[in-house]
Length: 284
Image (cartoon, rainbow, N blue to C red):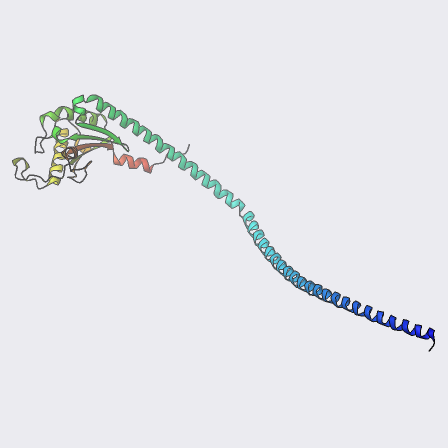
């Protein structure tokens, strides 16, 4: 064989070998690229599916928003339609509130006048009592009512419901105050401690218990105010509360002494007070 042919054949063989090697490398690269493209394609498909789902959700939300908007628009239209009627109702409500405020101011003024009158009554009474009398007489104004509390040992004979002579001067001063303030009712209220009545004592004859004693003591004061000091009996009421309205404990002698008391309660006439509540002031 010629030398030139041998060389050509050798060159062809080398070229084939090189071409074979190059094709295998390209094939590997193509396979790798194909896997990458396949992965990217799968990711794209998943993203597309997710985007479609998101679009569907947004479309549903948009539909709900349109429905809510339509409902709000309907409510707004209805509110606008009723605006005139509502304005009329609001105007009536404002008028009613103004009337109520006027009535409240009226009641406040009346209460202030009543409180002032009670304070004048109380001051007049306390000024008329001596220092010695004030030791046994307690005068208070509570919720528009004047309370005059008298110790039993100042008013009554020992172990009795009869008024003693020492009480005369004090009762005369109280009677003058009651007479001066003719628009007030007067309740005389008897109270005892919790010690049972000694029914064997001569002074307690026909008295069964503390109920009887407290009521009889109140009745004695009422009759003294009427018969000796000229207080109109139509303004007077006598009542007994026995031992059931104590101001302090009955476990000590001092406490028992405080609970044994008679209260003169001076209050505005009930019918006048009710008339005041029932009648509102006329509109200005």
